[in-house]
Amino acid sequence: MFLLIAEAAGFHESFARLTEGSTLYPLALQLQHHPWNGLRFWDLVQPFFMFIVGVAMPFSFKKRLVSGNRPELNRHIAMRCLKLFLFGVLLHCVYSHGPVWELWNVLVQLAFTILIAYAIMRKSATFQIGFSIFLLVLTEILYRSYNPNAPYAQGHETFGSWVDLLVMGKVNGGYWVFINFLPTAAHTIWGVVCGQLLLNPTAQTKKVRNFVLWGVLATVLGFALGFFEITPIIKRIATSSFTLASGGISILALAFFYWTIDVKGYKKNWLRFFAVVGTNSIFIYLFAETFGHLIFREFDILWNTGLFHALEAYKDWILVLESLLILLFLWYITYYLDKRRIYFKV
Image 1 (tube, rainbow, N blue to C red):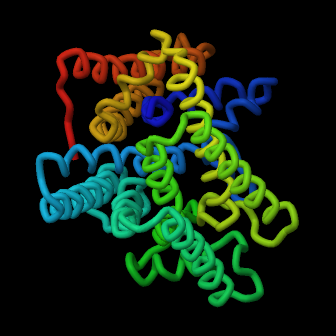
Image 2: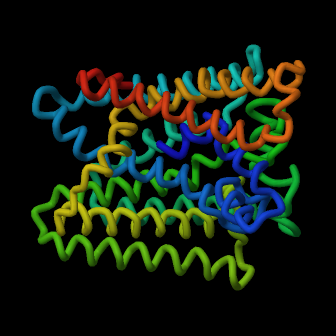
C-alpha cells in the first residue's frame, strides 16, 4: 500500500525521469511494469495486494461470525464486493475526466477474486488449491483455443482482448485485460489457505516450513514455464506462469515476515511507519488515486506556465522532492486516522 500511494504521488514517474541514463535507472525500471514478457518488482504489488486480502479473510470472518451468522456474512461480502467494483469503475472515470465503462482497475479485479475465494473457503485446503489450479488450466485452455498460433503474442489478438471488446466494447492501450480476475483469483485463494493455516494451532515452525515449501514450488514452476517457453510470464494478461511465480513469491514474503515478526519477535518501531498505511488501505488507495494524482498533475502544470522557468535545470530534482512531500502527506493522513482509531471499512 505504501508503494501504491507512492506511485499515486508521482514518485515512480519522477524518479524514472531523474535517473534516466544513469546507473540508478535499472532500479527505477523495477518501479515500472514490464512491457510484456518478463517480471519486475512492480509487477508483484497487485499479487501481494490480492494475496494479503485472502490471508486476512479467515481472521475477519471468524470475528464476524462470533457476533453474527452466515447469512449476514454473505450479505456483507456481497456489499463489499459491489462497493469495490463501483469504486474501481469510478476511478477509471476520474482518470478519464468523464463517465467511462472500464473494468481494468485492481479494485474491480479484487471484487471478483474475493467472491470466488469466499465461495470455496469452507472447503478443504486440498479442494481450494485444486480449484485454483483448475482456474489456471482453464485460462491456458481459453487463450490457446482462441488463438492457437500465438495465444500470448503482444497485441489485441488474445482471448483477454476479445472479452474486453465483448464486455466494454474497447481494448486497453497497455494490453491490460478484464478477465485477469480469473487466473489471479488463485492469489486470493492461496491467501485464504495461508490465513487458515495461520489460525490453525499447528506449531509455528511447521507453518513456516509449509509456506516455504509451497512458495518455492509455485515460484519454481512459474519460472520454469517461462524459461522453457511453455507459457511466457506476462503480468498484463496474467498468464498462468506469471500467476504461479508471483503467487509463490507472495507466499515466501509471508513466510519471511511471519518468521521474523511473529516467530522471532523482531517488532521494531520502524515497522509501524508502514503498518499505519494498511489500517485504512482502501480509503488511502482511493484518496491517493484521486487527490494524490491531482496534486502532482497540477504542480507539474506550473512548469508549462513559465512560473518556474528559472529553475528548469532542477526540474527533475524538484519533482522528485515534490512527490516525496505528497507521499509524506498521504502517509500522515493514515497516521492521523490510526492514532484516533478512525477506520474506513468497505
